[in-house]
Amino acid sequence: MFRNKKGSKLTISHIHITGCCFLPDLTWLGNRMLYRTYSPKLFLCIEDFEYKVFVPTITSKIHTIRFFLSGNCYNFFCNQSIRDRQGSLKREEDGMKTQRILSGMRPTGRLHLGHYTGALENWVERQNETLADGSRAYETYFLVADYHSLTTSLDTSPLDQNSIEMVTDWLAAGIDPEKSPVFRQSRIKEHTELFLIFSMLITASRLERNPTLKDQIRDLNMDAITYGHLGYPVLQAADILLYKGNTVPVGEDQIPHVEITREIARRFNNQYQHPGTGSVFEEPEPKITRFSRLVGLDGTAKMSKSLGNTILLGDTEEEITAKMRKAVTDTEKLRKNDPGRPEVCAVFSYHKRFTRSQDIDEIEKECRSGALGCVDCKKRCVDSIIRELAPLHEKRAFYADKPGLVRQILEDGEQRARERAQATMREVREAMRLG
Ligand code: SF4
Picture 1: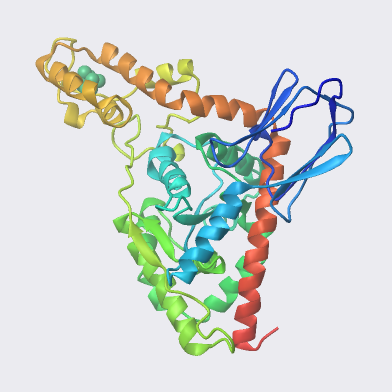
Picture 2: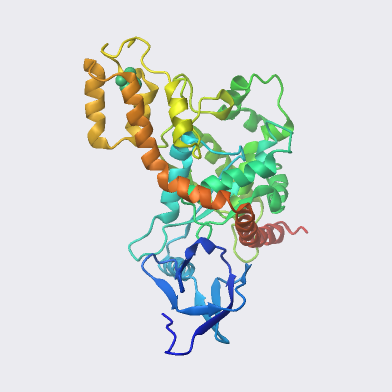
């Protein structure tokens, strides 16, 4: 903590932050400045200061924050980064491997509740999970999969704005860019290089047998698919292995994808050995995760933007109320006092996820007995959703106001991701004696 001595005010000329650009962690309280470090209990506090030229500058090499105070420079290392590094080293010394996760989403713009319960919540949990020694259980990387979006649409005009909107929702939901680099796939050219190499290691017939591809062809009524679409699990393998991801959180239906990644890693290792390290890639393990998929407001299909049955994470209370009014309930409960069947009602499925557990049994009982009408039930559901989303809305408003900051966060993430990707590609080229 810095306090000025009586009569000598501290002067901040500028603050230089490297490695992270998490300016929201700077809080100004009158003439007191708090910098929340990466341990929630630890604050750097500078009291009673004047600033001459306050210029926060951000670069991305070393994880340091520098305060230039009264002509002196004070360095603070980001504690979380150091603890993570210490944790990784300790695990390696103990013969344990660092668990690394790479997950991504296509840039579809603003996210909805289905994305939140189906992936984002899990991302935030994994990002914040710690081991007994306080170090992080996983290193996490989050990818804006813009190349992947070309498999279903060649129109690139909405991609930039959609990426910003999506990352704004990630940050609002709790993705911490200091802990988890967030980056656009197309900004790291190594993805395409590794994809090309991997595409030689798997046959077309193996990819044609991919069950997810068959589902997509059926769902999207496609009569032909492109070469790139057939190969999207190969691009996924490149995404994961470029960052040496060794844990892939998946629902049971996505295990075939992980299997393709494992096959490609195995095939590469059998074919090419690095002169120093031997096998370049680890076969990633699927981590079966129970993702809760939300049904859409129409009650028939999962929540999806293309079906127009969504509640967006950024929707206001009025917007959620208006959408909820149209939500499909039990079609046999026509009047308020008719007994209902919560198990066939979309609104009840939202209660199960967003309403406090002590209230869910009561709602179910009252629905079945006819004591609760759908209008009141929907109001209670909106209240529950709003309560859950309130902190997210607050953070979203902060970032939505600062698209420049979101871009800066992406660029910083891209710099960090690129360094790791380039290191992997150096190993790949050395193993292949290419390039
Ligand atoms: S009372 Fe609630 S749970 Fe029952 S059918 Fe109506 S909206 Fe659904």
